[in-house]
Image (cartoon, rainbow, N blue to C red; front, side, top):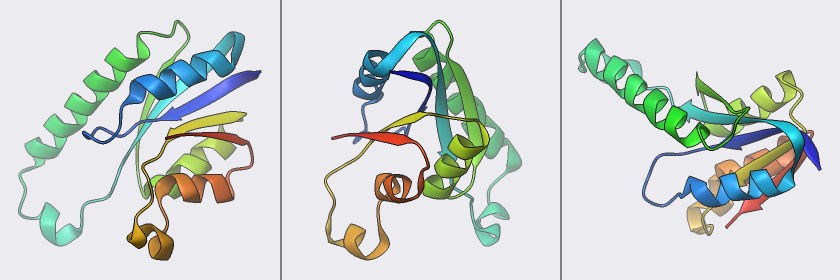
Length: 135
């Protein structure tokens, strides 16, 4: 079983974090630490110039609140919000924080994923720890 589990979450209708959390709990040993991670993709500079700064601050606050609510189910869970490309940020976080298992949700790949790759695919190919993919 695993001691330090990372559960990346995405807040959209296609992803349900509950299954990932259930799997993380099943894979964790007693006293395991679970980290809930969300990656905010960078907004291009030309778009940022047109959006009031308080919109970004409010969005970030809403995400942090939602993540905290998700993490309450685990006594030792922490939440982390980072910016960057999702696949790279997840792998980097896992490497930097001695994560021994990543539990990540994935959708059924479409044609575009065969050319660009999905986030879960990038994590599976580049992570140096175990990766459990939920479909």
